[in-house]
Image (tube, rainbow, N blue to C red; front, side, top):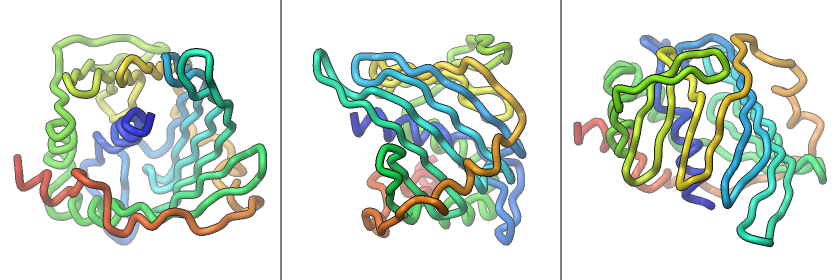
Length: 218
C-alpha cells in the first residue's frame, strides 16, 4: 500500500509549468483546478477530491477511503493541505494531524529555474518507466493521453498536466468531474482549526527521487 500511495503522489509532479519565478514559484501550468476521483481496487476503495490554486503552490486533498485486503479493511477520512514546502495531514475523525516539510520542494523550484519544465517532466516519466502509448481517452468530458509503465501501471494525463486516471498495481483512480476552479477557501485552511504536531523527518529526501540525479541520467 505504501508503494501504491507513493506512485499516486509522484504522478502529481509529472507535468510542470513552462516558467517559474523562484520568488513566487509556479508548480503547475494550470492556475486552478478541482478533480473528483473514484478509487477502486483490492487495496483501496472510496473517493478523493484534489484541488489546487496559485499554480499548485496551494493544494488540498479530501479522501474518504477504505484501505485493506480481502475481508480486512480500515476506513479513514483524511484532509491534506500543501502550502509551498509544508504538508499537513489531518485525520478528520480526530481533528488532529501532522506537519511535514516536503524534501523535494526546494529541488523542484531550483530545477525548474535551471533546466526548464520539459526536461524535468521527462525525467519523472522516464524514472518511473512511463512512456506514451499513442492512445487517448476522454474522461469526465476531458481528453487525455495514456502513458504506461511496466513497473507501475498506467496514467492518463491532459496536455495541461492534470491526471485524469491512474492505475497502480490494479488500484485505479478515475476522474468523475473536472473543474478549472480553485474550490473552497476553507479547505485550504483546514489545518488552522486542527491540532497539529510535528510529522516524520524527511530531511534526507525520498530515495530514488533526487531531481538532480534524475536529470543527470537523461
